Length: 202
Image (tube, rainbow, N blue to C red):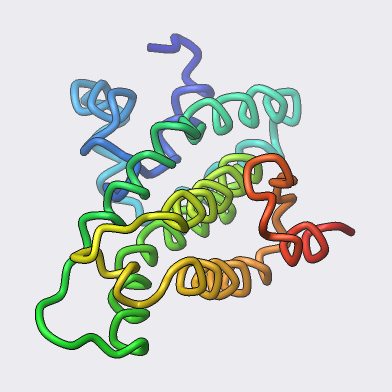
């Protein structure tokens, strides 16, 4: 736990909502439950109010800007492979009984992927650009991993692979495009997606 009270404020400001890729309450957040002073006022402030507080703090103490950015990046980092595996597993376990229309199947898959899109948007809004881009890439790679699957009970297979995965990847890309993230090249990982390589380049 940092001893510097200003640094404590910077850490306490960053909220940690639960969601995909996050195993419940993060360890750094749990430790603040035992800090009565910070915990008491933190519970009285909304996310927006904490954002204003941090902005004012950094305005008055610009020497803390680099350290605040370092803390933010560390707390909002993404374990790429773990997240890719999680997304792939969730996609492969999707099952629907009876006839499945492409639209219905597409909607169900997007329901699974939307929390990840919300997650990367949350990271982007808090300045964790790289973590947001990594999350977006993980969603794309999770879809790509399913392109050659053949399990007939799997929703994506019933929708028609590889086309269904490709179409959904384009949809995800269009959803995150307005965020202006610096997405990584995926030519090696996704050689069949020339459209992606052509789209992400400046």
